[in-house]
Length: 468
Image (cartoon, rainbow, N blue to C red; front, side, top):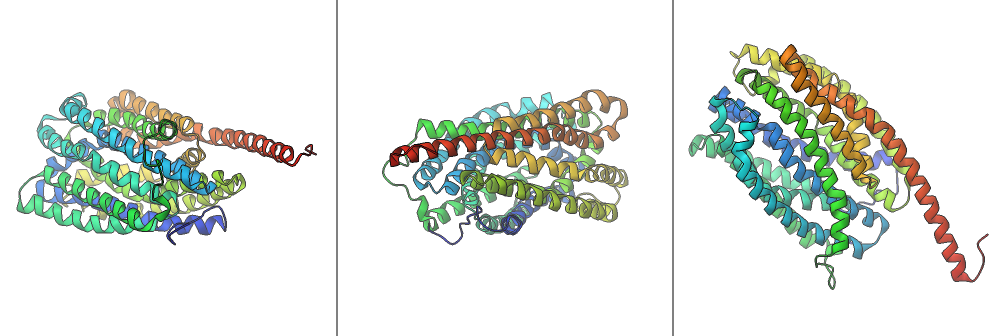
């Protein structure tokens, strides 16, 4: 093995390993969300409430498309983590190479399709006329940056799959500073409006991806291809798609419900859209610890199942549930006392109705953060164990719940129903994930037992002795 940055998560204290991996990952996510928030803050402060609403109105479709990209890349990293835990370096390199080929294909096809369909999608979502042009200008550029999204997330996922969560953090630090500078330059100096904020995000992520590539080439000698390992391979692509596509669909299916809900929010007017935009951005930032926890568990579970250490997976899940519950309390205290102050980052103090509505949205959502933590813990563990197709049904549960809230309850109860839509969706996903996790553990115990017996039989046959 080469490189001290790689970390074997199959030995040692689960809590210590999880925290050691999670903390750098958390800082990386915080900085990623930070520069996403900077876009929104600068847009709201310098371009006005309508521009803020325009960016916010694209949030759900952004999540549906970009979420699919990041989900696919996370799925590509799971076979890499499993082979790393198994110490099968040649197979690991083949998966890395074929991840690159698939990321290239996916990025080109998706960019062409969604850019052509961009304005039509916004019209389907009933985007208000007064924010339509700004919404289109913003999201079209974000979609043009899909190749940059695949570049960074594929490479960062591979780096993390080998236990290194620190390096992606460093590159995100660099790109976050660049994003802020570019935001101010494109909006205040070049006068590019919301499109400037989008270009700042795309360019910054592209830089992060290039830095990841340079780092991997120079530092990870274990990934240097030998023979024909770099060539496209049908079997490897099949395995990677079997992991990546379900994880991507998990995000996209979840986002379909968000798109329907966003359509309902749009019908309430641009003021309601602005309140949900501000509240949603703050909530997304607060959810970073859960995102980090999920990504950590995917790598942790992947490495340990590769090493056939299923018992360690359960211990890791238990430790993360403890961390998730503790953070839920901390987040609720923060929002209860400081939600208005934080919302002022996005809107002027005179927008009292928007500030009040954002507070209502945040208090209701954050009160249900522990059920949300269960989604991240169980879904990512199931995916890391190799059952991505099963985990997709959690996204279906969320989609159905949000769709029902958007179609049936928002027209009756208005903004209050919007505030409860996410908690209802989280509870629906939990109702599926908990029994699914129990089923996965039972299935894996049976599989591992059969494999052990088969290997014992083969070993006895090779020694010329009957198995005891």
